[in-house]
Length: 290
Image 1 (cartoon, rainbow, N blue to C red):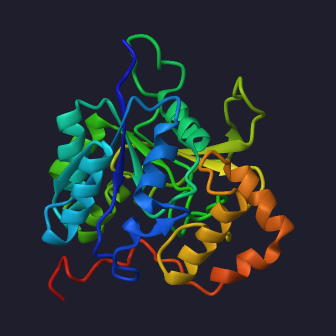
Image 2: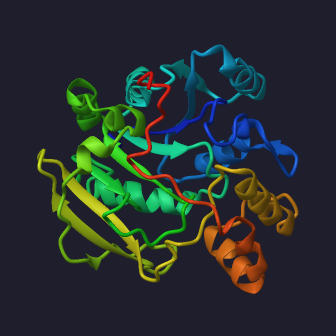
């Protein structure tokens, strides 16, 4: 039996830097709709669910999802790990993919790369994952090579359950999956598996974390890690709106097409070039009352 792969998109209205951004219009559709559609196109994902909070500020999110037919759950505002765990448990997920609602150019092909790496060769039989956690980016001190805004993380439900029970630091609960990879030393890169559909574009670094989790990190063969395609500020939103405008409001463009676009029109990169990216240590102080 093939594993059930559930992509969970986290999002809430009370963003600290750009409140209401997940319902912000991008070429005629709210951002959360753009992210949901693009995520759902992943060939390896069985089901896509939007996970928002029980806070009253997220009532419009729930109403939009209900109206639009987007499967959704509601959970803790600040304990995002619990929100993921409860959603994954309810969906009977074998594998959980973490996507954030502020990444409207997320690419289904990259989701497939991450999930296929996690499952290795076992995805079609009595499966057993090759890794416990796989991502195409990790926060500093690890180097990222994919643009900010294409982030994909995936883990088995088995280890998500373990993290849910054991993780107790604020960054573990808010950022969902750092419990797996904290302190890991990744070995030398090896070539990733070649896709039948497209040429090989990533290398793989792997290691065993201090807590015993098998970790793999995908590195793009060319480093584009300084490019910023996420939405956390008004400047970011303007950048993404300009990207969608260049594609006439379509949402089926690939990240490589966006790459070609910003190379052809380098002035687009300047729209949000001054924005500082948040780090793993940036915790929402509302969660701790500080």
